[in-house]
Image (cartoon, rainbow, N blue to C red; front, side, top):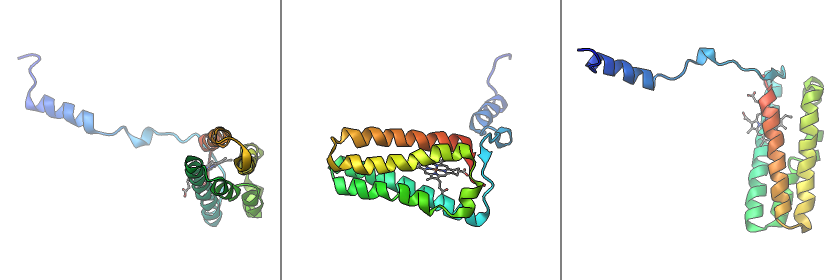
Length: 143
Ligand code: HEC
């Protein structure tokens, strides 16, 4: 009978619904930084530190703990920029540095503003910092 939902039709429908989209079709359009395995390990450790800084800043804003905000922010500020291994720095394209440099400066600014400003200021700056994270992650990959 036309239109009847037989067990075979039902099974086909269920299979269709639970089969994930093919991974083979996914295209990574991000630019590779061409880092070696050892460079990637250091680079990604700095990235995880930046995420930890964001966590510390947000937690500090929540409790109005100004010292905690400043301490968390400084870990990803100029100190981190200076600590980037020379071999990694040499490989990073200008377009990467144009996003990365201001990101470290924003962390320094959060640390300074946290000392006296209303908590809205470090919150707004944290939002702006996260925009930098998103912009760079959309463009580059570490391998
Ligand atoms: C200037 C570029 C740039 C900026 C800015 C940036 N990242 Fe990244 N981040 C990268 C790249 C490239 C990778 C590697 C992605 C890949 O290879 O898939 C990465 C990876 C990471 C990872 C994964 C670490 C791991 O162990 O795999 C975390 C977490 C991360 N970033 C957090 C952050 C946070 C938080 C910020 C902002 C405060 C940030 N990043 C800003 C470029 C950037």
